[in-house]
Image 1 (tube, rainbow, N blue to C red):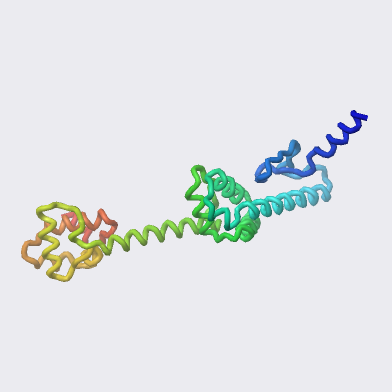
Image 2 (cartoon, one colour; image 1 turned 135 degrees about the vertical axis):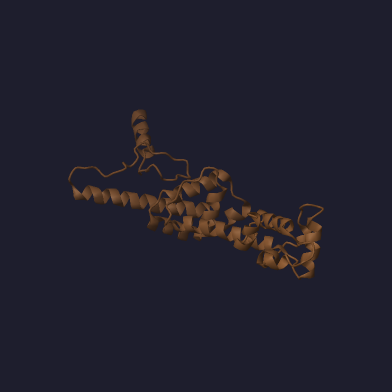
Length: 226
């Protein structure tokens, strides 16, 4: 009788589902018989259909599990790096339609997922037509644009440069209504030459400051070549 009870218990604990290599199992359960990467080549069309059905169901289960874990409350309480890397790994290994379904289930926009890729220590590569990849490029561009705009607003008197020459340049610029780096970048260096005490040396220093703050224009670049 004992032997029969044990046998019955083994049957109950036997794995019932396939687990492809990229399936994220958050429950800790494992499967000793993973789904093969390609359907069996036995010439039977039904086998391919069964394979696709298993794969689709596995992805659906994974999506639901991830959506249940990564709720709004989860992000509010603070995410941990291993969870983030697990999530972006699950996203990266999907096909485009499956990626879209995952984002929808998570309530995420591509820019949100893109932010997670920047946080991870080891982020997988994405194709250039991936919406998350494109969102990350847009975010990088926006950050660069914000930095340039901040530099343009810098007051000339706040910039650290040659303590002998720069203050004199700033004073002369103020008389022309040029008070910020952005206004200096937009100014014509040849017009500044008409100011007393402004020569090629002073213009070269102005060009160096503009270059250091990514505001160098073609007109000012010529001053570096004098």
